[in-house]
Length: 259
Image (tube, rainbow, N blue to C red):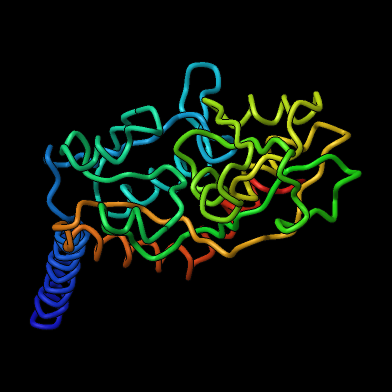
């Protein structure tokens, strides 16, 4: 009888310890979640129009950034609320506190870093150009003053072109990258400057176009408000775990394979 009761007590103690441990683990998972405007929900600003990073498909927002943002929220014990905003006003959306964070393949630049706090980089977003295959070896110093340079409004490519081509260069601004690429394919512009992953995706089905090697190294980061250091720390920790366990590599294979 003694051994039976002893054994039963031991099993009960183990069960209680396991239950306490489970609750502790659950609590820890949610304790790491930073404060958000709406409890339990991470509100994310996104442009909704930058394939393969983000775009609408059958009425649903999809893409690399969307998968990544959903996984970040899941690991923080939060649900996601994606807020689609025109890219030219997306930083203002974050700063006015309409959303908690901004994930929209935003390239980290000194000018942007004056307005927002960036996380560690999560993806190479090098600057280069889409060109006709006959111009595959084009470099910035070979761009003639009479050449028309296509850029997307508010993009890192637009800022780079303004800063790196001579004053008075013929820079044509488009509402979307795809419109610029279509004009390139039609011969109406000489080149289109932007981040390489987006250029590769947008031009991959156009047999006459190719993409240059990187002209400048860049990284894309998640943006938060300057004062939200707790949020930035939680995002950096989560991104590090996603890189370490291979999630980010699988995401790149899913969205960039074949480019």
